[in-house]
Amino acid sequence: MLFILHKWTPIEELDVNDTLQLKDNSIVVIENKIIFPTFVEVYNLEIEDNENYYVTEEGILVHNRYKDELKTRNNVAQGEAGTYQSKTCGDTEFLIEGNGEKVWADGIDEVTNHAQDAKYVGDVHKSPYVENSSAPEFLQIKIEDELERYSKVINADDNPLEGLEIITNTEESAKYFQKLLDKFGVNGKITIKK
Image 1 (cartoon, rainbow, N blue to C red):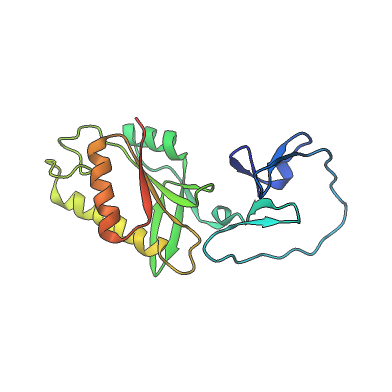
Image 2 (image 1 turned 60 degrees about the horizontal axis):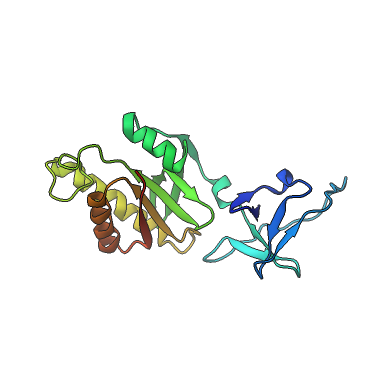
């Protein structure tokens, strides 16, 4: 995949006049597209830490499509939470694995190489995503278990993901999730999207 206009694009979808950003941040325009009717030997690279790398003397940024190899399922969240997840992370969830653990990520941001998890809060007083809310304790234990599994998966040596982005819609839940990221040693960030 190539990085074009702030997103990863499969090479077969490139067209004449598309632009590519090179290693030195300059932009080049594709002037011609030729598909050769022959087989070429290719190699599957295992890249440690980051699945993005530069090729050719010009330094074209490419990606080895880690996300395409993962087991997927449709968004299983319902109601407002499901709508929020679809809006912020898309309609496909990805099963990520590492260190003997598995977790369904709501999305994967291929630009930042972060798993994504959407956490919608309807009522801050009742939400399990807000500290000291009236939500039952077992729900918060379940959330902590999920974050601990994310930590183990993302910190696995054989996992190319660099972190976790939790997308939520309130300041209160953002503070709660930042505490959990810190507690479980998860490299990540909190994004608030209304």
